[in-house]
Image 1 (spheres, rainbow, N blue to C red):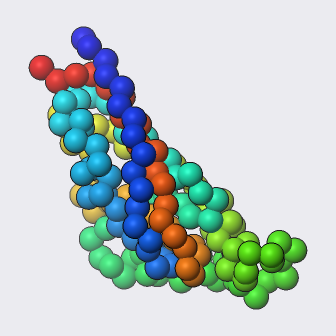
Image 2 (image 1 turned 120 degrees about the vertical axis):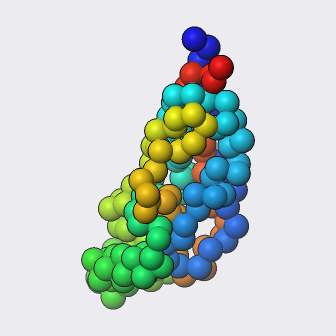
Length: 144
């Protein structure tokens, strides 16, 4: 058995506020997935006002509804103390804390083992955010 490790940074383009499916971008950025028989892909975002989550990717109403609920949980009109970076910044930190900064997905025979309806999503919580950086770390047994 030969173990492999691969790590790289993926820079995502700027996305508008909301939840955005990024599974194809992640898979495209890690072609070494094809060489892994059994392993794990860890995806980490290097930002505190955006997040990562796994959820339903089949119906675009789901991420829209989830974003609506996040906006109700962390509204911009709450009396936050940290306001120096604008009214959307502190709510963005709260949303990022709720969803998290990383996801891990099992890998088998060169493919992510996401469920039938699952996908990896970027939670962009700022109104005018820039590009976001993800660190992708793949570890597993080499195929063949």
